[in-house]
Image (cartoon, rainbow, N blue to C red):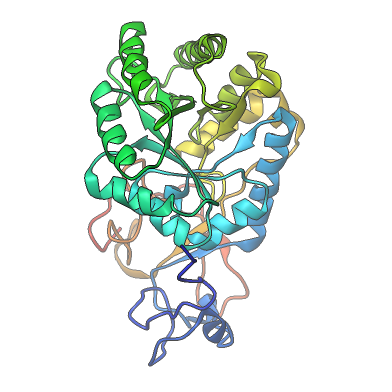
Length: 372
């Protein structure tokens, strides 16, 4: 299946938000020649802006971190769902891209991604058909998660009928968490369900998401459980090929690296970390997590640098109805708010020489659909 679209040649409609004025669809190169400048008010706000220098810094920071631990990186693409950033990450040494759905996988494939770790169950006929179509390309490698005999039966039924195989990672979970086998009995049932369907169902590794926990000691115990399962399956010869051991969201990837590499698998196992937010770097929860990492993780500590916020959302102050209250022209339609409100970073008045740092006491206290 050839790549259908290229981000560099795709036309951009004037109906997209955060742009300047133009009448007909243009290529990115055409728009770049207009030399728009946000600070001159050439763009309609609100607009999200990425710093290329900071993206490059964060790419290099993570490349160094991964190399120090000798592991692989499959950053979670759902964070940006921006194919040009996927290509930047792959060019920066990423082993593959992690995604969450069959449709996201299809989008990534159409923009040149050829190795996808789908950190989720593959459920539903149409979703399986999407993956089946992509797997007709021998250059495409795909992994999904399994945690139940019922899911194994569905996968086996679909992919055996098309004469294909599917790589699966056994997912571990915790009580009160989300997906994943909870105990040894469930693991045994899952393995028993897979056995008659080999080689259609190829056991390719072990997966977990430690972010369902928030206590470091509990997280380390969870990671050690994954290592123990991987070691046991290796001893039993259960893996169809060299296995993957994978975990790590954006908050605890240092702890995952520590525990997985200290297990001593060497070249027998490919350890794959999946943080997604490092590229743009959040200034809320993930900044706190990163500060912890810089204090406690020996590799991060001796790097003598940190991830930098690379994403800014610019908007107009549209009203100051009270001396200590400003109303800004962005809201829940423009910015995430489920993990904390955006943090004021800069302010600028048209005509001033350059933006200035926001005073430390400024904060967003409430967001509505179009106002903050």
